[in-house]
Length: 152
Image 1: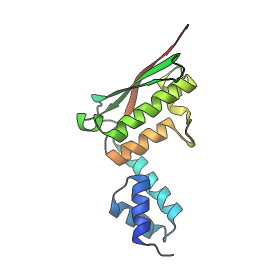
Image 2 (image 1 turned 180 degrees about the vertical axis):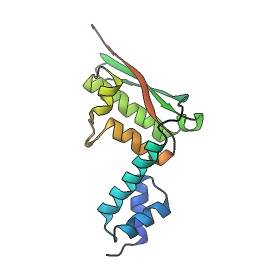
Image 3 (image 1 turned 120 degrees about the horizontal axis):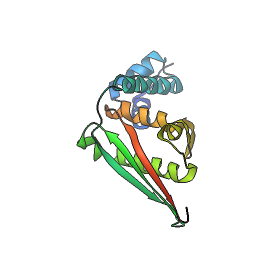
């Protein structure tokens, strides 16, 4: 099975991996796009695992206030450098995690990480963190969060 430059471009846009990584994955998968996407994601997760012992002293505090105005969340999302802390994709992940906390009310960070993402039940919060970590090249983690509800 063959693939085109458009396939490489689409895989790159979908996964955030480098062009050569996408090309190698498509070569290994024999042009099968779904297999190549899985290969790229697995490699990204493996890269994230290698970074597990690094320190995370930078980050971003993401917030979310529900439309009713009756519950709000702040999440501390940590990374290694201030450069990544200013990255829009990193910040968007923080906002998504804050919305997750608002909706699902986890008690601990561990419980939060194990939850399926409310916008996409095919992955957990931990998998989302690892995927972005593999893409960005830094260790990412949720430091802590707080959830406020009117009357509680």
